[in-house]
Length: 273
Image 1 (tube, one colour):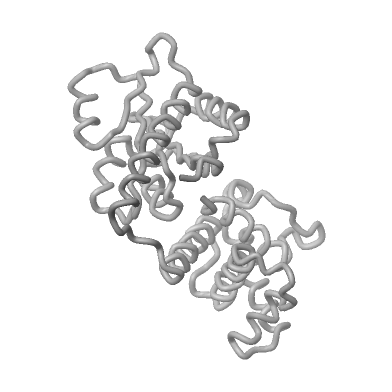
Image 2 (tube, rainbow, N blue to C red):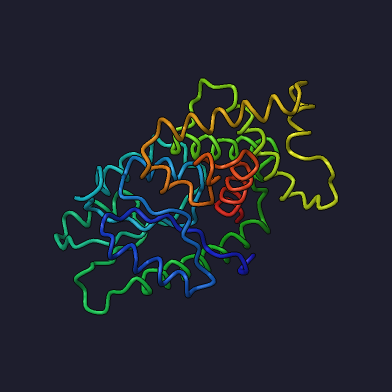
């Protein structure tokens, strides 16, 4: 059991006030880490597939987003979610037949927002309680059965899927060669961090140059072209939402190294559980 690592949580909620409450509460709880917040049931499926959160907080009604909580629940059987996250529903719906359908769809616990005493802290506390119970059960299971351990190759595939997803959100074109270099470069930086190779002298550009047998300057220019293309094609609000680090004040876009390190840090933080 590893109680020191924070519980990773994905939130699917369309009320910005409620989202702010969850973020503020999580900021005061070392045991909780929100990996993403979305108001889209479709994006929620994708995020759950890529980041494998331990728990999902789900609003059944997404009037100011897209889809609904039931769209999310109905999409689970056909998804590629490889873990089995807890699903905690928060909703204003009180009709028992509707809540019964949610339970039948696999919801772990339901929190009526209109219930006296409801709070986002209560939701987090319940999530942590379920986590502790699951850890005890898992510990006993591991003692008596052989369980599947993710291989290095499986982990690489999962990390690259996360990188691809983030670059799609930013609008980095899949047809540009620079995107291939960006994906491999980000993965390299993540892998070096996981391996704790602090003394490793090879830079990411040197690594890519050896991997693709191409001049490092040419690789850097090709990656920078892919980055510039995204900044020209994508909406400014999308860029500001998904890339929150600095940009070069002269060019208006991040440098290649800034871009690589930003996404390596961002994705590592999301998947490091």
